[in-house]
Amino acid sequence: HRDVLGDVEMIDIADVTCGVGNVFHNKGAIGAYLKMRYHAESGVTKCSRMLFITAHLAAHVKNVDARNDDFKRIVSELEAQAPMR
Image (cartoon, rainbow, N blue to C red; front, side, top):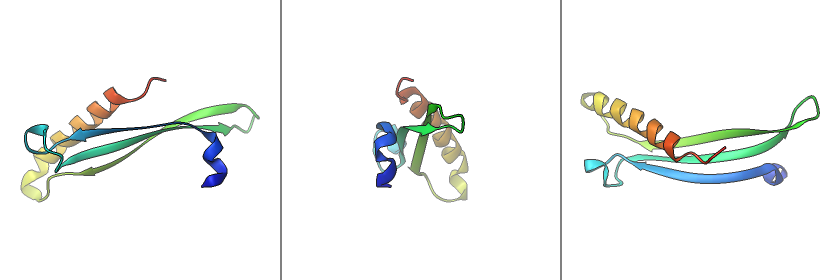
């Protein structure tokens, strides 16, 4: 919402490919990093960091192991690409 736009300190995005050979972008994830200021009850201004992820992974029951492997890889790579604190 526009009311909190001034509290946004940083926005960054990253992607992880999980398609054929982990090269093609037909499967994978995108992460949006967000750092915002907020005012604690004590009156002190603090920051909160958030990561929003959306993913398109392999379908069907037969691909559950591949999905789980892709999930682990996505989390690992997005953590590695996270902006410095």
